[in-house]
Image (cartoon, rainbow, N blue to C red; front, top):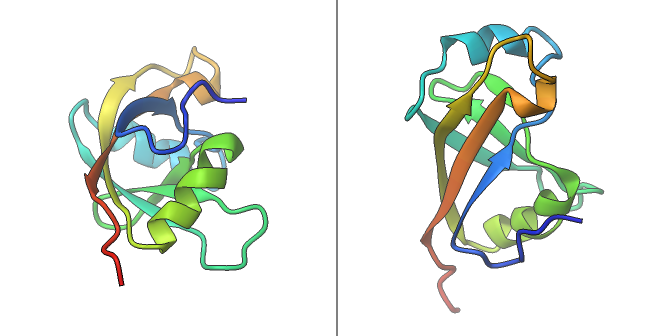
Length: 112
């Protein structure tokens, strides 16, 4: 289980799945501080996943299942989050440790 509690306003997290489908090519183009796009799976996806995209739309990977479990529904209900590259490591490091991002809440969901 993640040490990042639901509703945490800012946190760092590794990106998983960066070695599949030529995603490592996208990772190699990134630089520290680059802004990223977070995209939750559509409603009803089980388990829900939050995907990490480079600007321009290329898929990089996804957040861990324990983070996605609470973050995806929050995003689908209107909470807005932004992300940027914090740590980039080389191919000599385990894939799930190569890219660490900082995620922060930009806006809360608006009440109906």
